[in-house]
Amino acid sequence: MTSISIRSNIQTEIREFLKLAIPLASAQVAQATTGFVDAVMMGWLGQEVLAAGGLATMIFMAMMMTGIGIISGVSPLVAEAYGAKQNRRVGQITRQGLWIALLLAIPGMMIIANLDGLMHQFGQAENIVTLADTYLNVMAWGLFPAIAFAVLRGCIVSLSEARPVMFIVVTATGFNIIGNYVLAFGKLGFPEMGIAGLAVASICAHWIMFLSLLGYMVWHKALRQYSLFKTLHRLEPKTMQQLLWVGGPIGITTLLEYGLFTTLTFFMGALGTPVLAAHQIVLQTLTVIYMVPLAMSYAATVRVGQWFGQRDWQQVRQAAFVSIGLAVMFLIVAAIALFTHSRQIIGLYLNLNDPANANVLNIGVSLMTVAAFGQVLDGVQRTANGVLQGLQDTRIPMLLGTFSYWGVGLTTSYFLGFHTDLAGTGIWLGSYIGIATAAIAFIWRFRGILSKKESRHPINGLTFKE
Image (cartoon, rainbow, N blue to C red; front, side, top):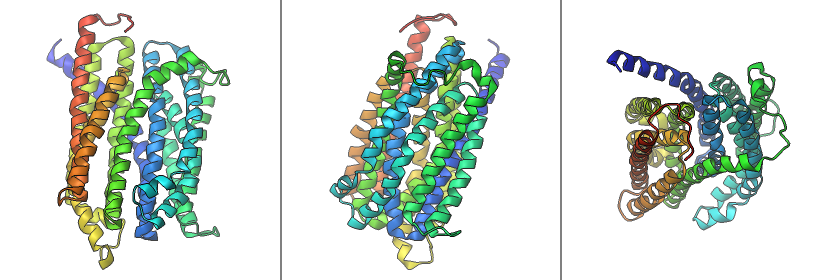
């Protein structure tokens, strides 16, 4: 293959990748902006509400993202079926994904609404637990639509239809932001609900997104060939088993990753309310930025999965490195912005002229400096994991993630946070050491598995069973 044709293939892959990644990133950033606005408004309600709301948000996100991880098998399986032109299978996977979403949401709601005892055991202050519990009792009702929306999103994006997701999420985000202000502060004749009002606005936005995307997929003519919701009432154990076989390890990996940051949040809370408030500011800021590499990982799963359906290993390799390379480029730019504008960013949440916030500001600047460059590593591991998901390789990455996040990250964070003078900064440093370990492990796994497949099945288009 000539250098011109290679360059042309790379340019084509970049273009196709960005056609998926840009709408997805727009949707993810818009959705994360809601959490950002939530955090800002929590800050307006006071340090205690900011600390408690951030803790509660992290708990809900951990549960929600675990559920989304478990149904993440929808995306690579639909992408493979799309690449192999198996239209009937696309509908089967989507329907059973919705059933799994429902079966996950019911116990998940019960867990979310009964975590006050656990928060007490982790040393959180009584007023923080009360406020966090108020938020979680309401947010529990948003778990099903959040997971079900992810099922539909995984399907439609794998069919190379990403724009509707962007429009729906952006619209729902606008509603959520307005609802936050109206309900939290009692505007337009509504009662002042405080932190509970933020939760009510958020669950309404989740339902709007789910029902809007469902309506689009039901009525859009081009999607009718897949019979997406035909015989929706019917359970298909074999298809559900395949989804859980691929998605179950993703869910466990997601739980471990979010569980790490939830545990670190508890660690920060044990160091005091100012440390926890600073942690929430930095974490919420990073969450908005993280949505871009997260969207890139979704696009990587789709592109790799589509080429996997065609058994084209050269294109699989190219799609993988395009996605990781673009993620790194974006995150380096973001790191520079965070490093040079940390005080201004913290000023969005708190009044920097108030002496009562001086301690939070100083801690926040230190954490932001560590996070600015550490999140580059986070983007690499996230995108590399998305590549592996496109190859439907999820069980070994689950083990690698367990070792990296908990064996390395958590233990290092605990040591640096509680046995050195680094305190909260040490907790963040330790987490990024674990994330760096995961990034290296996932890239090593991808190179190994692709080399094995190329040696076993060198001819594109060869059908096989592993």
